[in-house]
Image (cartoon, rainbow, N blue to C red):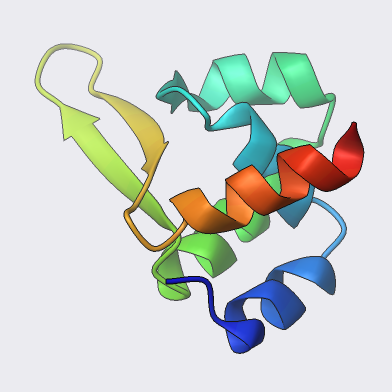
Length: 88
């Protein structure tokens, strides 16, 4: 369910909405960075904040070098649907 606190939290951060919209499908850090044009630090902070809020999940993949991908959680999906409607 979409909670007001989630919407207010996300709306206050510069990169939150663009990151969430890009995570409509699972993405790697480099893909997000290239698409959004965010600095590595800004993107890292946005992903950490969204992860701490329970809206984004980080998945670490085995291999060398190890890679990570990010995807929406069940809690993050309603926010993306709402943001996508507003952005149109």
